[in-house]
Every structure is written in structure tokens, then in C-alpha cells.
Image (cartoon, rainbow, N blue to C red; front, side, top):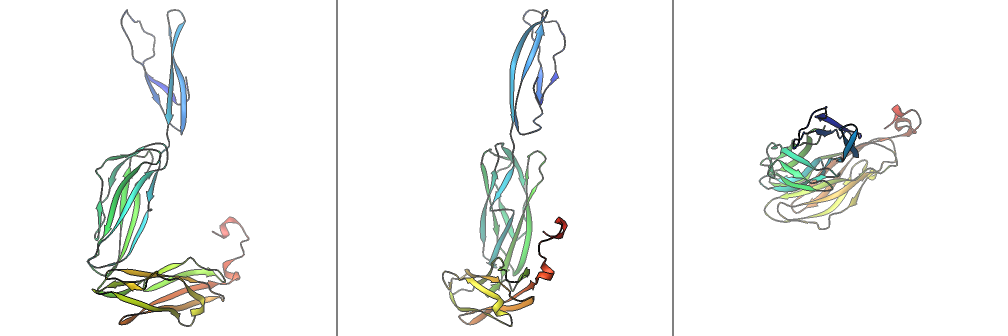
Length: 286
């Protein structure tokens, strides 16, 4: 008796001689996260009965990643290395095994634990790290797959990206696009970085926004220090808040020892006739 408990072998009528025994095999289906109980009842010699109480527990299990399934290493000078630790976390009561972590394409490398490895339930962790070491300038991407034995689970991708920088002083990105947004709405802030891939420190100064639509953008956070060490970076946080509809263009301009950094800004402000007023069916918005 008992939900999700079943007798899979044994249990039929039989003759047991003195000192003999028989075996009954019970299975637990574990079809849902639950505690199951039941009884195994043996009837013998004219209706007498003996019973054994059964219990089983089905535990839920799922995996989380810290810091997440997307990792942008940001700007890294060619020839330099940037490492990022990761944790695989069990965020339910059941444990699971990590059976494989795929090797990424260059310029990324994996420092993996010995696999397969068990991740204990209830917040247990398994740590590994990924490293970006670009040898040339340019935006580079790859994907790492984490495979587990979680029932019904599929491999979890981790998307990696890095901006390799050549020698000298470089901005990242070259173009910052805020997309389409309603007028009089402040967008989520995005970073603009100045990276120093030279052999001597530099000092940044006079960060500003220039261009026809300069008033529609704003620098809302400054770096703590304007001195940039060799292979170091500093960043400014920029938002768009357009007050009239239409495409917007401007530039963030920063002076530094021996030069000027320029990052183009773009975006579009939509009026109420294009953005919508929120009315309509569920297919009309997102």
C-alpha cells in the first residue's frame, strides 16, 4: 500500500519450509516532490498477517550558477589575463552530480574540478574558474556547457565574451546604442570604459557629452579615480533620457595624457503614438 510504492518482484503464494526465506522488491516512483509512506503486508497460514512500514522521500533538485549564465570579461589588454571564479549551486534539497564541463574556445580556458563531482543538496556548491587571455584585438565569444545528472535536465550554457585591446589607450565600446525607449524615461545605465594598454599610467580628465543631442544623454556616475594604471581600466555610467521623439546622436568625450577618447552614443525616443498606452490584449505588449 502507499502512493508511488509498487511491488516489482516476489509476493506470490509460496511454501516456505522451516528456516527458508523469500525476497520481495519494492520500487519508489518518485514522480513528485513528496514524502511517501505505505505498508508491506504478508498474509500467511489461514489469514494471519505481518506488516512492515515503508517510507520514502522524493527530493527536488535544481542548479544555479553564480555569477550567472552570461559572463562579459570586459576589456582586457592583449597578452593579459583575467580570471573569473564560478560556483555551481544546488538550490533545492536534492543533490546532483556534475558530469562534465566543456572546454571553451580560445582565448578562454577552463580550470575544472575533478569530474564527476557531487553537489550536496540544500545549497551545496562546486567551484571552478574560467580565464580570458586575448592575444589580439577584437570582440571574442564562446560558450561552455555544464552537464549534470538532474532528471530531465539539459546542459546549461555559459556564454563568455571579452574585448581584446591592442597596445595604447582604447575606449570600450566604440558605439553605445540605447535602443528604443519612450520619451521622458531614463534608460538603464551602461558603462563606457577607458583602458590603458600602455606601459605607463595615464590620467583622464574633462569627461563630457558633445553633439547635437547632448542634452538627451547624461553621465550619472564617475570613476573613483581618474588615474589609470598600465593594463587597468576606469568607467563612466551613461543614461539616455530623451524629451522629444526621434533618433538621438551624441558622443562621450574624455581627454587623457596625450589624447582624447570618443565613444558615439545613439538611441531612439518613441512618442505615445508609437510606444502605446498599455491598453489592449496580452498580445499587444510585453
